[in-house]
Image 1 (tube, rainbow, N blue to C red):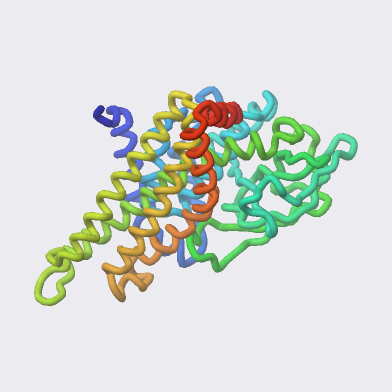
Image 2 (image 1 turned 180 degrees about the vertical axis):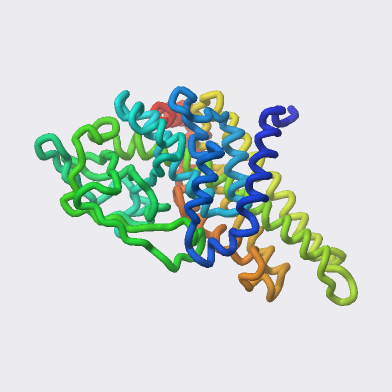
Length: 394
């Protein structure tokens, strides 16, 4: 079986690459050092309709097929992982609202999300809650025609500029999801600086102190917050991160090809040394394998196959670990220059490590993949039921 992009997908890929090369690559190090994404770049991103990538055309979205959406994430990730993170969280919220929002919520919010008129952020993590996401400590209490939220969210990507947050809280002991606008009474936003990687993603903490929101801002039903709303969003997030990790690895490879072709040691170009060629070979092979896993996950998502969820976890696990390995080798090849901000590989290494943590850490993916493996091979019927239950929530 030959895997080949359609003419439409190839054209889209070329368009994404042109945008990244023209608008992102040359400035990405500056964004990283300043820990800031310029508003004009976000506007250009919105004007290209990338923020509406996953939404149906009826709401003004691009309705990209999942392979095209993956290619978009790879190219943006190749240029700047922080900007790719904007695509990730914005589309996570858009997808969750499209899947679980009511008719009024969809009509009110989705066209604005598709156009980039408003920016959305995903508010799940807390100071005491990360991987055990269903145990969020933020609370929501119904009071008349409004919900009152109290709690503290942390590590919220693009929380500094988001117009609306998808916030997860316990309501009557049930994890639930709510739309919280940035101007809601009782909500305060504090920027976070000094992160290891994806420094331009404008992280923030959210403090909800008797934050009052309309009752109609509940997304789905009470108790749907984690098992349905968050799970479907996180599946999209893992898919985006997987492709973005391929983008980082590809950027590392390109940087190493250029560097080893220009720099001489011991009288010959670095590329003539056998150990350098071994490292380049490993990069090429692993990147191709990582990209194929992403193609597989994307294809299965496109046809609605239940196994797309576990295949996305596998892709996210493999691509993020490979990105870290490739980036580490890229720094090694660059030597002392690789430790300097004058060369992008040191940023790639820092960003790659973040890919192993966000949207489910490497260890969480290992737990999930191993559980599926045991069920699939020791009890195929149980494994099939597990996939069907996961798919029902997507």
